[in-house]
Image (cartoon, rainbow, N blue to C red; front, side, top):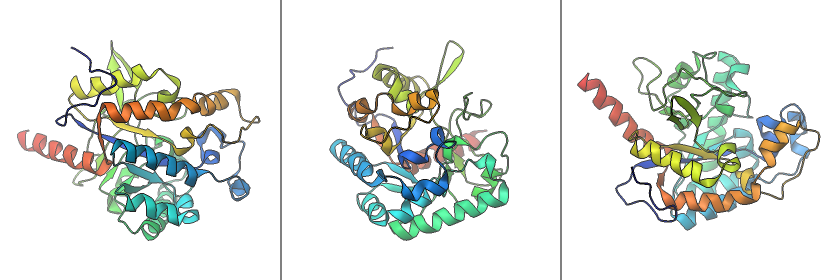
Length: 301
């Protein structure tokens, strides 16, 4: 199977992949949760709005519309940013309120969290919120109730599952591609992209993997998912990943610092290449196509 030229866009008939941004500030990440208390957030340098403007410029340059999975805490602090994102044609979706992992909340607290976040996201952006992504992909085998809560709250889709084994998250037994997690509900779960090779499953949907590994690895992975599996990729990154000038926390564990700070200056150029190499769109558009596929498969069965 031939591989496409890395520097040229795919043809217009290529698979539509989902491009998404997990909107949280540099101090709200899982890597720093044990060294930066939530109570200290208000006193830290907020850089998320400037970084989102950089991301919006990248998308505008590439003529790509994407989905911004945004923390309610961030939306409440930056309403003008939310209006700009929506006004430029991007989808606003929920990333929960303040980056608490789903398995650390319990069912009632989770329901309260997503309701609070959605209200603020819709109020600040002026757009309906129908998608959700759990912080740190924290819907897994420990939270069989989470998708049911999302379905009851009327969400159309979730992109909250990482079907791999990882030290921070992972649900290895979950399907690799879109599925309906709640019987009798139209809710669709779109897991973050993985790739399989020689019996091994690897993360390939963005984030730190995209920053840390050579660009060619991610290009190959998205191409393989599109051409070999015939399915869309679900890719994500964070606004702080395009900000090499962000504060350095020397009190965080070495592994956390390595994951968070490595190759920040290389992120924007790599994103430009990826945005130009494949067809990208909002997650809700990808979900609509995957829902139609699931419906057709159900009828055929």
